[in-house]
Amino acid sequence: MDFEEAEGKRALAGAGIAVPEGELCTDPEAAAAALERLGPSAIKAQVPSGKRGKAGGIRLVENAGEARSAAQAILGMEIGGFRVERLLVERRAPIAQELYAAVLNDADTRAPVILFSTAGGMDIEEIAAERPQSIVRVPVDIARGLDRSRLAGIEGDVADVLLRLYDLYLKTDAELVEINPLARLKDGKLVALDCKLTLDDAALFRQAELAGKGAREKLSALEARGRGLGLKYIELPGNIGVLANGAGLTMTTMDVIQHYGGAPANFLEIGGDAYTKGIAAFELVLANPRVKSVIVNFCGAFARTDVMAEGVVQAWEKLKPALPVFFSVHGTGEEEAIALIKRRLGLEPYDRMEDAVQAAVKAAR
Image (tube, rainbow, N blue to C red; front, side):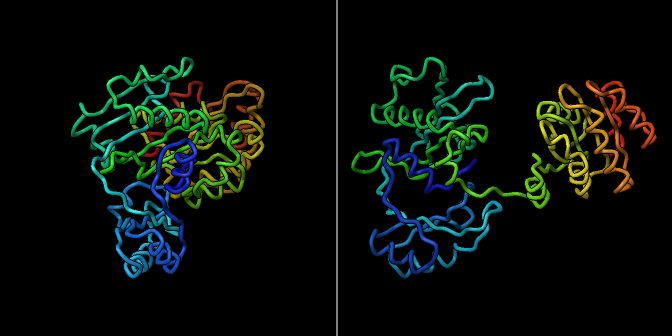
């Protein structure tokens, strides 16, 4: 779950990290009134997306008239697929230096890592490409935690911010907490001028209060339809439809598709009680006009593959699509499932998942 800047900064302030004074507004008059109270300010579009400045969603203003005009221009904009409906009017700060600070999940070490750079105000990808030597990486053993000794060589007050940032990362079950820029002001103080906060969706049940403040997700029409059906569906740019039971098997199937030169059109798993939604799930896969072939990969343990196959077969008979489907079925109920597919669809499931995937990739071409 992603958060808009203002909500991220509330979390930072709660962790003891300084943020500028600001007000949330939803109309130009409120923005003008906020400017009168705050003085020269930055008006910022509140959407969970980067590149807001490049898109024209951040503007510096000096007076109420400029604030009103800027708010009129920014409200209603679309940035990163999100419509701007809220603005943060924030008092401008006299910046002496811009730094970068973040705590995030590191896929390579499967542990948290702290990133710090003296080259703030840029995308971290740009920093890594242009000045990789300026990035300090501090891997953290989550079992042992983080202490100040791991941050030797970093200025004392910056180290304080990093320690607080790590504590926030832990307490909120975050995947990413990023401050860019972390500004050193002319009076020497450190202030977070921006914040990106992303929480682990699997931990939202522990973060109910914070989760209620999360930004609306950008969903495609098919993703919204899947959510309404209670299905975990993610639309992807490929042309091979994927239907499997369980997230792990689904991701494995997608990896094998890519290994053989194909591109999946979706993530859709029907594990747990979703295995009873085979018809709705298959209709969802077929509703994507880019799909040229479909791979159905079932591996039964507690869920029976014949029950899942029955839903898929019923959907196929109902929709009568003119595209090829390839099955791989193993586990509980596989004999019944294979017999069902042969009898009703006249198709022979593959003994090996790899063979079924290769056939689907070839057909999609």
